[in-house]
Length: 143
Image 1 (cartoon, rainbow, N blue to C red):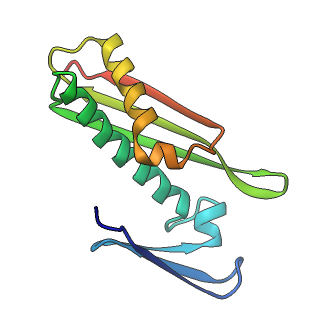
Image 2 (cartoon, rainbow, N blue to C red):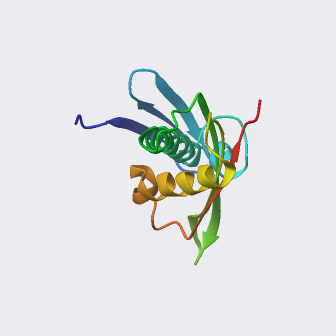
């Protein structure tokens, strides 16, 4: 498997400086104190972690469903990443995954069970095992 790479740069101090990042061929963004700690415009590392987790989980769920005989028509996953001070240091304390799948033939209980399995086995979930609270809400889209 290929090695995935990203790059970041930073100029200036934290309150008034700015940084940029790139990942892959088309992911770029800027990071400032306001975008990271005050909800201001721009990007932050926690958004990137959320995007990585939602993407990895969705792929793992699609694979898990297909292996169980239920190929998904669609899977949509949102991730919310909470950053809070712990012992005086900014720390990711919670990740909430909310997924909705359109999956013919699977029932709601089995869908939730397969989603929990995908969450446990997704590489990004395993990398984030130190986050104390990772939740999953999994529902079927009847539409």
